[in-house]
Image 1 (cartoon, helix red, strand yellow):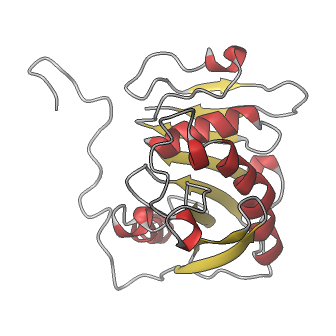
Image 2: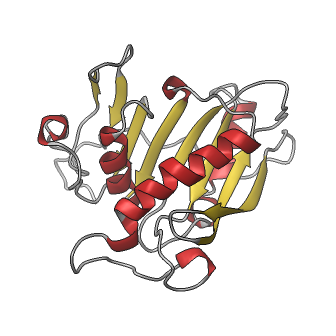
Length: 229
């Protein structure tokens, strides 16, 4: 909440930005099961494909991670992500993009792919939210998407972003794997703990521990776009 002397950092979102419009084309949101070799079980993720999706063209991919109180349905059920994406597409404000929302806890606890189990990982690290999820994302999820959808496979067309715990995961994973992700976003992020100190220096100030920045990773031809409001 803003104090009497505070000024908003960003303008309010346009009215109706997250309201479903019947007079426009809509993308497709589907629940996918995939074999996680990392965890040793089948896990779930939601995949959004844009209006007019065709195997005859390639699409950029955003891997969008949820907060600790949600699961792979959070961005759709609570964030209305598919509605916002449809509206932006109809208004020609974004390029068509595939959006992948996996479950952020790569654990066998809690059944159905580890959903709602091993919540905090507070004792001895992040549990299934840490290295196991990083391995699941890099070794299982991304290869599945690029084998089953018409997705670009270069880092310039691959982004990773998340909210809260998902923001912390995005910073931890994205900044460690700059050969994989050219775009990294963390929103009200959990503190990143797994990234190297020389990369952590780009996260200074801001409510989520960072400010927008651009950094050219070593041995890469292009920069990384980094946003941490």
